[in-house]
Every structure is written in structure tokens, then in C-alpha cells.
Length: 111
Length: 114
Image (cartoon, rainbow over all chains, first blue to last red):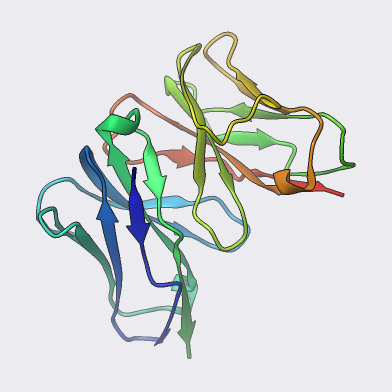
């Protein structure tokens, strides 16, 4: 089966940097995705890693280590609008190429 | 095309009633997925279609649940004899095959069973 862990909640200050960690166990790893979800809204795609290393997209970066089953999402220059849940999702080729989502990390950005 | 559309946005029903939700995916996307999400949790996979073929169903999808995508375009998800435990947000998403840019999700249908 699959097991994905993330911290439940995090708090950070506007303008700061925050790192949201995700650990996973899966037998047919085929990519790790990060989504942002504001309360009551649909998840929106943020980033994708399939090879080890760092992928940077503006204020957001995502890192993957396949040997450690570990990823993180790094958010820089935090803004109030970044307050949301951040979902880590793993695509598993033994699971029909579908995503298995973690429980999400609720981030609160304070002024 | 304005993205993935789901109807209705909200549904309140009495226990034991049947409900049906509709999803209209992005027109050029051949894959369509249904997920369920409860408060404070990540989405849980229910089923997915490639064109009109239903290729996988989760064990979460009991025999009270059925999904169709008759012409490979829109899809419906029906829940028969609803139970209070069915209360959740039902999310639809679509993608091209082997999408490396994730899914595009709809805004969801929030079901409340009273």
C-alpha cells in the first residue's frame, strides 16, 4: 500500500520562509506532486518532481529524494494569501497511475 | 474552455435517498477522476475513466456507488441509499494521459446527508 505523512498544521509570519515536509512509502513511485487548496476550494497544481533534486517555480520550490522517500515544499516571501492547505500526492504505477494524497498541511500566515 | 465544471455545488439530502452528481471535464482531456474529501483530510481516490472505459475502482467505492462516462465526455457519480458517512466533498478532476502537470480539479460537490 501507500503511506504519506505530512505535518498537520504550521504557522509562519508574512515575509518569512517555510518548509513543508512530506514522507512517503510506495512500491511503484512515478512522481510526486504538490497542490495548494484554499478552504472550500478545489486543489490547484503547484509542482511536480520525478527525479531527485530541486525544482524552482517563482516563490515556490519543491525538493525530492527518492532514496529517502522524502520531499519538501519551500515557500519564500510568504504572503497572507499563502494561507491554505498544502497537499503532497504520490503517483504510483502499481496503483493505476493515480494519485494518492497525503492528509495535507494547513499553513497559517500571520501578519 | 473554462476548466472542470461540477454540478451541483452543494447537495443536502435525507438518509436513504439517491443522489447524482455531474462532472464536465476539460474537453481535450481523456482521463476523468472522482475523489472524495472529508474535512481536514486529503482527497481519496474513488474511480477513474480513460475515455468511456472505467479502468479502476477503489475499495472505497461500495456497491451503492456507481459512476459512468457514457460518451467519454461528462461523467456522473450516483450514490444510492445515502448514509451519513457519505457526507463529504466529491471532487472531479481531468487530465491527459500520463499528465506530468497534475490534474485539473473542479470545485467539487459538497454532499450533506441528514
